Length: 298
Image (cartoon, rainbow, N blue to C red; front, side, top):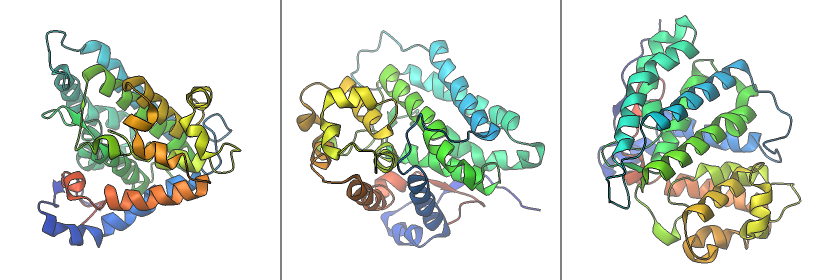
């Protein structure tokens, strides 16, 4: 019988990076992200794909978490530009409810795994102490999905729904949290970063746009973006940035603007896949908070 354990941090020092990059977990996570990207090539959010009962169950869990925002409205007495303290109440509710929500979602034979699954989910929406959010939190959500795959909760036929239903719903919830509680961008690259918060939105979203008849240059045209944002994660990500930031796109999102000059989405997708391995999986400040147990091992 498999023994599940509470996952612990194991990347405690930059010297641990080579061990992480040679680990089974690294191989599985980077392969999983690539496989998810490939699964949505040329697929719109509105195109026909199966959403299994299990994928629907995860979407319902995310809907419930979204309902708590009303329960914990932002503290209007807070004057700081970033970091509304009410986020801590929302995060405490997640901490408390996550094991119960997963118990509802999983069959009884997998209830032992909840101890191991919980930290990946509770760390996927931001840090309650620092009131920030970044690509490491997004990665934690993907690791949670990967653990659910390893349990057999999802199977390979769920890949498209995992991106276009589940991950998309997760991103929309994260955007609501970022907007409502003014979450600080964790380790923001500032104007040269891909985005203050997300990365995989653009990696998966660029795969969707392959063969779409829309060229990368269209991603810098705000009218096209608003017309097509509901169908493409990449354009929805840009739309959110445009709503949150002032000034011209080429000023506040230099790297995304530069990508709009690339000729083909295939090239954008390849470039973002490489960049993800270097800038997210390969950066100590991002991966130092990851945890490892019996399902994802160092």
